[in-house]
Image (cartoon, rainbow, N blue to C red):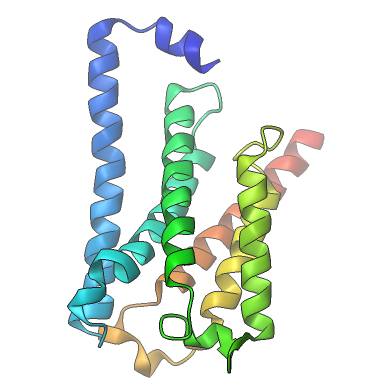
Length: 200
């Protein structure tokens, strides 16, 4: 388990490993922040005042999916697996808290019709809740096709309306939801393929 792996490392190895892991996750986050600012602030019309929450939340959610990709390709017995998983859950908690604080017609007009959620809005909220429950469950591993499926549905219904208007993409940069959806679809396919291979 994780404690056994940590205990088997020397003090120098632990320090080097922790620094390396922090650098990896930091680079992922910095990259997604830069992408988000370029797409929505520089090439888009989102005001700079929204960077600390609205834009940061996009970067956090983007980072989550990239970290999930790292988790998938990491051995469950590896020390990296536990730390990438912890990083994912930390970003997930931040994403949930910021999303709840911003949930309104002003920030997410595509999810609303009048003062109520649209069908797309209701499905995206429901899948987000289910995904949170799965993430918190001790019986569900992060390398679980159900997590990838629920996350892909969640992302799909949040962003689908803006995916096909390529001429309206800010700076010709693909929407973050589209990139995340494609990554998740790949993870679903690979998970199913791996499961089939294991049953052979």
